[in-house]
Length: 245
Image (cartoon, rainbow, N blue to C red; front, side, top):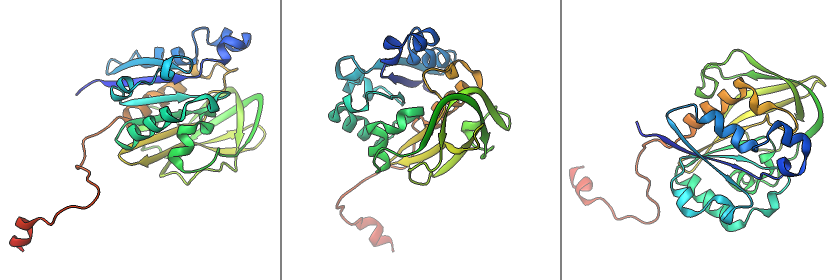
């Protein structure tokens, strides 16, 4: 089995501008995520950030990425449209995409889902979240118990304006009573997409092993797999097949 090539992408703005965020993620959210994933010998992990040339997502990087993990929040509009188009095409061609937390507003997520920035309720007061597993047989839930409890997180609440997921793995409950579809799987082209809700920058969510286990599981689920050859457009009739009928 070949290694899975993973690129963890992050804006890397909050960590440089907000002392509280820097204290939690001194090397950036991307390095916190990548550091955990690097413990898995089957994964080869690099990072990329917004302010690098081509946002760190050159054709060479994308061509050598099996799964792209995406965290964005305050600078969605700064992501260049031509880079979004290249990422989108790679997903359609089979690259996996994992979109985290406020990445629901990222251009790449809205383009692939065919929607405007998805609307939702939110409250960043730091309250308890129970992330319930509602599809226990799903590979992304491998190794988990019935739920993950996060002591302090930002609340996201329904209605969440997204297309109905192909598979729903997690639903969140918050202290205020709100619920949220927090683990949503989609297929676009031959690529797989997973949206995972937790991960507000002012809370140490990406230091929690159960949360990171979900991301690790999702990387393996989203990795490209061999399938049937895909063709498009006009094709000639198969004369040998016709003759055998």
